[in-house]
Image (tube, rainbow, N blue to C red; front, side):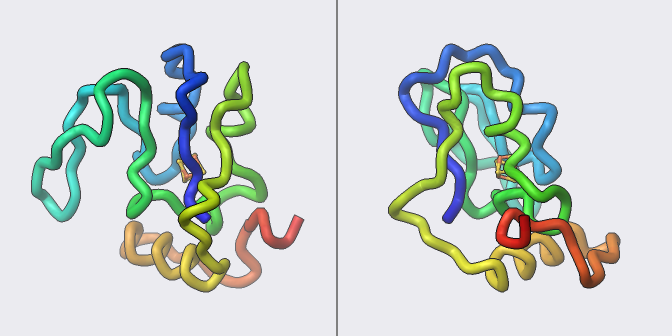
Length: 110
Ligand code: SF4
C-alpha cells in the first residue's frame, strides 16, 4: 500500500528530501507527472502522491519518510494496498535509466 501522511503532520519537512521518488510535496504545492503540472492534493500539510510512491521498494528496506518522521505520521494507506511486484514495477517505470536488479531492497524482505 502507498504511504500517506496523516493530519498529525507538523509540517517539519523532514520527509521530503528523503524520498527516492520525489513523491512528497508541501501542502499547496503543485507537482509534476509525465511533464504535466498537477494540482496539490492538499493545502494544509505535506502530502504523498500515491502514483509516485513505491514504499521505497527498489531503494531501501524501509520507508524513508516514516524512518525520519519525528511524530510517526507517515503510515501505510489502508485503502491503497499494493504488492511488491506492483511497487517494483512502478520504481522501474519511474527510473527508466536506472538498473534495479534482483535482489533489490524492499520492506517486504526485511
Ligand atoms: Fe517516498 Fe518511500 Fe515515503 Fe513512498 S514510502 S513517499 S517512496 S519516502
